[in-house]
Structure formats: structure tokens, C-alpha cells
Image 1 (cartoon, rainbow, N blue to C red):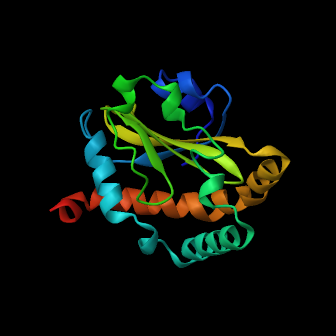
Image 2: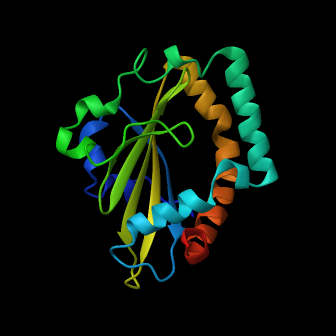
Length: 196
């Protein structure tokens, strides 16, 4: 379910200190029935096990295939456009005690981990269109349970990046996030099978 941006910006997440030049674009919640205060890493493991791109719905796979094809044709995802050559990693802004909590090796997928704590983690990516951060946080719900929250923070690469983000917005809201919600919530429900 889509949430107001204030549901991310109003919480004391560690990421806030390192992204003052980023815009919080999207905030989404994922229901995790039966989750407790210490289940954040269990939820991440279940999602990793059950929610890869190959397991996405047909429309979502199609959108990502088109995006990666365009990126290859237009050079959006060349190594020189990513973290390091063009964009300095946010890890350089963070203290070692924070970055030491996550392996900086890229993947799976296009993201590189920044940190992983008991109730939040952040991953970043960069290409010719945008420098982006996916922040995941563990939030107590009014009924005493817990749910996963995702915030997408971006710094577009100039006018082209802003245009790109505007063009993909309808696809994010109508196709990608609803499919992601179904998949992530199903992975949580099926965690015992997925994680053995």
C-alpha cells in the first residue's frame, strides 16, 4: 500500500543523515502478519528467497526487460555511468561502523548494500538516469505487529533523469509496486518453505 512521504521522513532512520540531496519519491508498506520486533532479517531473507525478477508477473518482467534493453542500447547502464566512475557511493559519506554491517559486493540485481541493521537497511544503485536508494525499515503497526516499509530516494541525473523518472511513474504505481507487494507479502507467508 502506498503511504505518504512523511511516513518515511518522519521516522528516525539512519539514512536521513546521508541523503540530504535526495528526494523521497515513493513510500510503500508490506503486510507481514505474525511478524515480531526481531523479524526484520527473517523478512529480508524470505523476500530474497522468494521474490527474484524471474518470479515476477509477466507484465513486470516485460517492463524490466524493456528497461534493460533500452539501457543496453542507449548506454544507460555502462559501468562508467554507475557507482565509482560517475557517482560517488553513499558509503563514502557513512562511518565505517555503519558500512561494516553489509557486504558492498553488488547484487543480486542492480543494487549494492550500504548497511543492514536490526530494523533498517539501505541499498543503492546508479546509472545514467539516476542515483537511487532503496531503504527498507521495520515498523510496529497499531495492532502490535510489524510490517516492512520501503522508501525510494532519488537524485536524478539532470533534466534527462527527471524526465525518465516522470515517464516511468505510471508504470511504477500501476504495475511494478502492486506486483512487488503481492510477491513480497507472499514470500513472508511462505517463509518456512522458502527458508527450509
